[in-house]
Length: 233
Image 1 (spheres, helix red, strand yellow):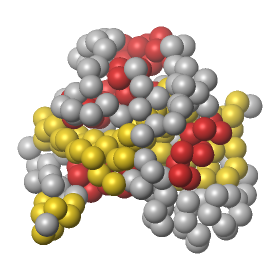
Image 2 (tube, rainbow, N blue to C red):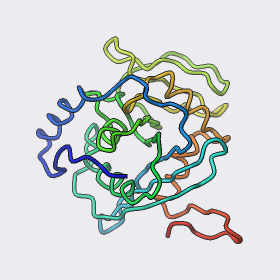
Image 3 (cartoon, helix red, strand yellow):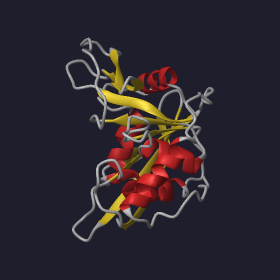
Image 4 (cartoon, helix red, strand yellow):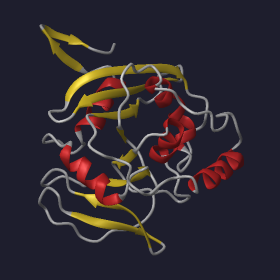
């Protein structure tokens, strides 16, 4: 994959906020997801004692969700941890990992927010714009907005609303477990995003693409090729 060069990653906090406001208008909320055969998940590890983090991407084949390819990128994190500006901290490593792929995923699930963000420009939207690829935000917690009660069954969902605008949905992906928060990243609409998250479940809270990306970022992704081996150190 080849990323666009939309802006530099070196900037002040006020500059980053202005970039988010500018780029938010470029996010497409209309679905361009057809019938993807390759779906990827991306995530990033926490920095180690020296400040180095690992960005990971895992590409899966649909249907079946078998692993096609996985890549990582390691680098010292430069941007401070500031809620609402995590894409400036995490996106460079995620994009670097994606640029190492030999395959080209047609849909990317991101462990983070899409437009379910105060400036409607979370990590999934930022990554989607840079890679010019449909992306879905699959967050484990709420950054902004509120939702109603959910049923206990898998697939139960409730709209996530902020200032009267639907920005995502709380989605029950495993019975008896807290929901995840699905939102438009880029080039996808909310019903399509929810449908694909549901299609990528394999009995866990997280959809398989981001679950495996989380393991890869932690250096714990295993695949079977003859004998079990560590795919990513």
